Length: 420
View 1 (cartoon, rainbow, N blue to C red):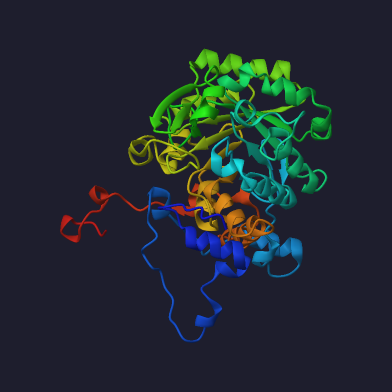
View 2 (cartoon, rainbow, N blue to C red):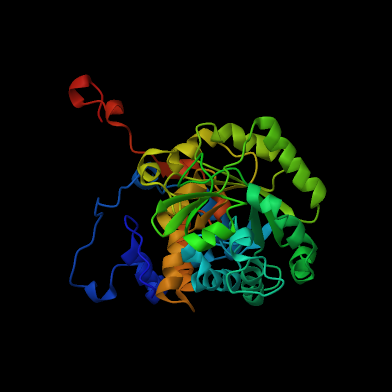
């Protein structure tokens, strides 16, 4: 363990799953037979957490499965495999972008990549790695972009998963996508349709701002021609990248540009939790994006102003409401770590959910198997939850499977003539 902490996040629970795996989907087995269990009522953090999955009595899809199997179906019969932005994935989960923040620039970034590859789930590599940590063709370091790609490719099973490379304004100056697209070492991914480029329009932790990291003064000085450098912290400085400028036309044209210039790569677009997130998603899908990822305001792994974390951006539940029925592949992230929140997001329209802080904590707990065990626990929970509503694939979940807690003003009291 590196001493990595995640205040306000269920860190202890995530670390326990990284150590003990799928058994953590249940209370400690030592308590069996000596303790009574029920809803704790203490897990509500945002709207998505307050929602509940609601199994029906009548389950026609369970009957269909029974006929297909010639026996009563069980949770183990749920097939979690799915397509995520053009990639085959073993489960509706992907590894979110970490970028060049220091936490991911250590061995944790490579460890997360190796384990995501072994799991057969897609991995997104965040912006600004090339300008900050290097591309990796010459004088390769463990932090470089190519090393992160290699770590993933070495463990990924053939035909499963894929690598998604983000590009910021500063990355565009470094021609990151051109470098990757033409690199011989990346061709196996390209040849098997497992490479995508992601246009980053914004992010959950600091919508409206670009990426931010803290660098030692001498290191900041070396990249001052590419980034904004603000000497806020004594011997260390704030490094900020541009958030980029978008209108509907600019977004549409940039996606068309990506499709024309990199025809063998998938196109992903990452949106912030903005008030017009629904309109932006429609523009992206209309221009041909293979996937739109939306960071809820609960998301984030890197450095961000404190005032943004609690006061800026829409919660993920509201993002899902504003997007409505997706017209393409929708991927979401924001405080994902266990099956309940993931299943509700999928039921409300997402194809898959991204692991950010949870993934880094898991590999910090165990660099060899931590993320694998966390994902195994999440997969078991998804199978239990999906089968409980009489369905046997993530795509079969729908809004009818989720109950939203009414707002206080919507609850009518008995004296008003209607039962609450």
